[in-house]
Image (tube, rainbow, N blue to C red; front, side, top):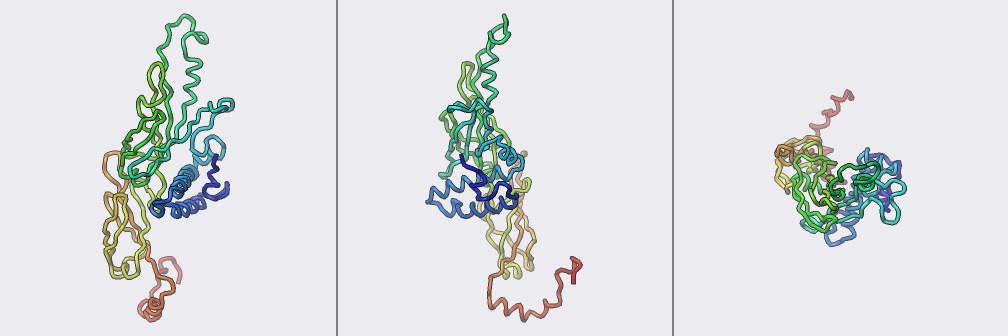
Amino acid sequence: MKELYSVLGVARGASAADIKKAYRKLAKANHPDQHADDPKALERFKEVSAAYTILSDETERGRYDRGEIDADGQPKAPPGFGGGGGGFGGGGFGGARPGGTSANFDFGGDPSDLFSELFGRGGGFGNGGARPRPPMRGSDVSYRLSVPFEDAATLKPQRISLKNGKKLDLKLPPGFENGRQVRLGGQGDPGPGGAGDAMVTLETAPHRFFERDGDDIRLDLPVRLGEAVLGAKVRVPTVDGPVTLSVPAGATSGRTLRLRGRGFTRADGTRGDQLATLRVDLPADDAELRAFAERWESDRDRNPRSALGVD
């Protein structure tokens, strides 16, 4: 079984900031956009994303550290129930989604169904002359689906493969957050009284440059000095594809521009916004820029830190 801290290359006691930094470095190095023809890089990207999903969540990380869940986020079977391949945890199933990428999609049976099977049938443990119970339904099967960031924001249906061999297009519910469950009736294990259900727990996979902020999406947008000083129209990535954004003349680093309706889909069907924070990017060791700054007389008497109470 893989060890999540080793996957990200951090110590078990690493801080949340160190875990995030390690994830971003690995995600950038193995992102499918950079390695379209390298299946090993794709698998590595999926692996580090799955590890970050658990370790970046304080509650899930605590459960993992205490040994309550495994590296796939599935509950570990209690002592005495896991031997010989008969434990409750299921193996991983990759649900292929459009475009050739695969979902992180794991399943495991519900331990409570075993106890119902042992103690809930007619004739057992004091049932006496009571009327026999109806046939038992099959067990529910639990799945965990990591949804790509862009797909989660735009509610793109996910092609998934179930334990029973069926392939379905799962519609994502508007306004969902990490941990939201979707029930697929009759898609669980078969039983005398009919099949159980499939319970799909949804999670949004981290992104290498987008961050979710409620229903909004935040992005640090690099701009050249000339674009900030003179104003410009620049291309900006969004979850719906690139768009053109007008940078006003005289814009400074830290200024945030809003792209309306480019965020996550709310429960009522409306969309949040994308917030692009400008970051002026200066070239290193540029002789012309250095010469300009040295002769820029009008800027020498200006103190941009006066509001901070320093001279």
